Image (cartoon, rainbow, N blue to C red):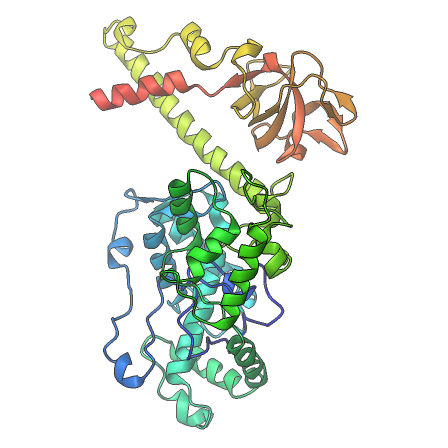
Amino acid sequence: MAPTTRNTQRVHEQPNSNQPRQGSMDDVANVHPLNEPETGTEEIAASKKKRSRARGPTFMCKVWGQRDDDRIKVLFNDKGQPIFNHSTLSHFLGTLARNGKYAPLHYISWHKMPVVYKNDMLALVLQKFDISLGHKKLIFKSISKKWRNWKATVKRTNFDPDLSIEEQIHSPPDRVQADQWKELVMFWLGDGKKISDKNKSSRADQTLIYKMGKTPLAVVRDTEAKKLSHEPSRVHMFLTCLTKNGDVSNEELGKKIEEMRELSNQVPEGELDSTGPNDVFAKVMGKEKSGSVRMYGLGVCPSDVWGEMPSNGTSYRQSMEWKTELDKTNKKLEELINLYSQSGANGVNPSNIPVTSPNQQQHVGSSTSTGRVKVGDFAYFNSVVNPTEIVGKGRITSLDSSKELGGEELGANWCEIDVQLPIKWNEHLMRPYGGLKTVGDAIGTPIAWPISLRKMMMAALLNEWDHMEGAS
């Protein structure tokens, strides 16, 4: 989520002790009064007696001790949010956020932490999990949220404002380094006190509390979409995530629900309350703040949901995902070619190896006839100078010859491609427009390209390779 105007990243930050724990991979709590719990942080009991009976801290020893070549696969939804092995990833990020070696606790805010620490944490995450570099932004947002919550927990359970600096610095908490603890105490007794009091007051005003435990919004949305057979509206998500068994926890929540139901009844019969800047949820809860969409979770921007073009962060993530996919494809192709060559060198007739012929490949996925091209297909597009050279990858967004792009109609035998992954960045566009001159300039932007110079992904060849791997 975007930073808020309440200085929530300051060293003093701490949730109200009378409220349930907040957080997870969704930073909704810092922008709007709609929260998810922080996955990977300790459960803090309401009293000292109960606290001694709470479970111990999460260390994720199995992940820390796994081999580098045994990375954990994490699956993401179309918004770039983890939905499979999300809990393992989230808990591991929590161990990083609470480790003073990787994430020193004494910096006033996450933004003040030197980039060298952040890069070390990112490298470690990529070493343990099979995810692309394009998810860097989500990883940092999640760690920063957990880091701030950990700092709040340390303050709540160990800091005493009535004691002097000298009395406190000599007994640092077990999991906080002594030098970092000293700087924290000095800040909390100094400049941080006034800001902390202000944030406590703001936190106490929150009345809408997330009820889905440690399950992040992305997973809840995915589950509800399967139940409904369509994307759930934000009103549906609101009712699902903020009520428990239909019970309304407070008067403010009841009023919001009643308003939403009245407006939902006005939606024409047979139509859905599609998510947008003026949907029923927005009419009741108000406009979105920059950089976030309520009821979607961490890392989702308005332009990702209802904008014509995805945000820069999403475009970067998608391009890195395609680059990772292309690297894997090239590696498999290289292994297949080597296997094919070795078979011939060893006296084995290469024709006995079930590799799809070029003509068969073209028939399966690379036909240049317009009848086999569909809007929404992903395709590589080739250079006009050297038609055998792939210069980029993208999604076909239009085959309408009358559609205008850059003030010019596409025309027959041309298609509109939204560039996802530039491969040859300096390749000149065949139809430059709006300051876009090269493929690299056009990332995340539609361009016009001849249909004859595009080809679909080589699915047939890879399928044969997977078949051969399974038989071996």
